[in-house]
Image (cartoon, helix red, strand yellow):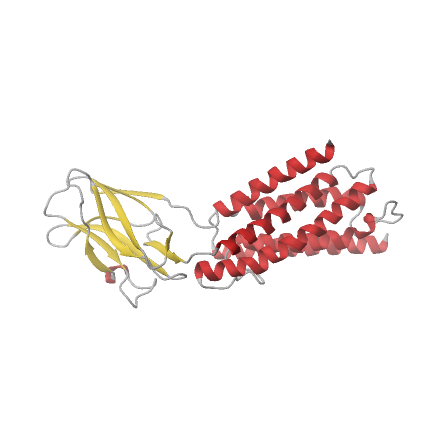
Length: 320
């Protein structure tokens, strides 16, 4: 009965973590508003779009609208890039499909996969003076990234590998919670951590590379670390499990006379740490926007702390 409960809880943890990971993989649309000179503008961002497709971009405008005003859609011209001054963006009049509504729109062809296009809105008076506009809260233009289609066999193969890998980690943690006076449970727990690597390594390194090549036309930049803190933490998780296994392999004996680098009393704490890292990798930082500098600092700081902790335990074990 206990084994069934362990399996059910592990399945629930794995399902929750993997669902959150895939749900947060691409940036979610965001509602942006701005009020200026009695005009209130509102739009919903389109972070990604299927490459080379026509997309409709809409903005809701409330205020003193009359026929003398010019409602402009400003976007990058060909051969321009994100460093182009906003005043050099192309001007396209916004259309108003229904005169009884306050929704203005335009049509735009999405960029090729892995590339981006930028745009913003503005309202001008009859002589071209600025009346109101809408950009991101930090003053930057909106951004659309073109994405390709990931073949089903790649998507579902990676999902299966990551799911089984996370299930193995969850089950290993469940067994670790019972290993205080039971070497058999400790040995089973370590074996499940070993099993998790069999699935996580190809799921993270191989299939994530395949996925990104189809999605963004680039290989995964995760070695040593990339721009995604979530992906970086997945790599740290794999390294952590390697350290955990190598430091506690002596505990696999049913009656270990001497503890390894990681003692039996510390093993459960390390198992819980694996759950915390998994939660951060699959759930927490997949949905958080973190700057490139913060991503780099956090990734290297966490990795350094793991090696320092392991080194301290190693020297303590050697001198005990």
